Length: 169
Ligand code: GNR
Ligand code: NI
Image 1 (tube, rainbow, N blue to C red):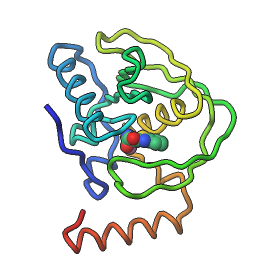
Image 2 (tube, rainbow, N blue to C red):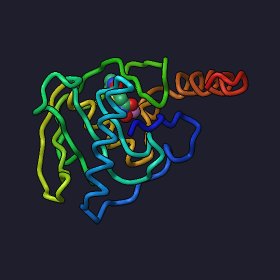
Image 3 (cartoon, rainbow, N blue to C red):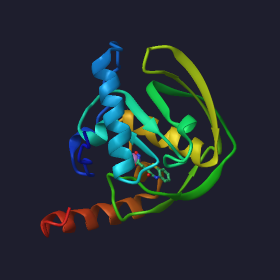
Image 4 (cartoon, rainbow, N blue to C red):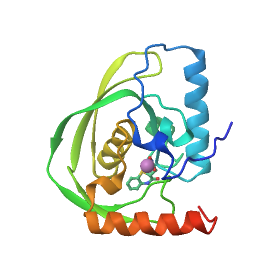
């Protein structure tokens, strides 16, 4: 099932999501639906709050279906190591049409559980590192605009408010 993507303005995007404690078939179905929804929306990552579900679950595939081994499930993820710094354009499916340069660590290691509840660590660089951080942020109620200047952030908020008023958001 393809879920619609929740957009900026919905409070679910700005609250911390709930820790996952049950690793059952319902969770595995949700993960399948999240991958399907992410691919349908042409994203390289998707966090559960973006489909209105406030649980600490995210999926990533920076190859966009090219490499089946690149599918990454992150449950209860935490960034445990970071290295370097890199600035790159970043977007979010919950803020369609907006893009801003965001400076983040260039290499990160995440500790997370898989669909079966087994803990693992994964180190990523560049786009993967960015996606690992972007999705972990979502689960903490944080959007990429938290990492840009207040001036740019307020401009985006103002534009979104205008779009909402016009019924275009
Ligand atoms: O599809 C996405 N692309 C992207 C590009 C640069 C940095 C982060 C991302 S994640 C984003 C999908 C999304 O909103 N995930 O939460
Ligand atoms: Ni996002």
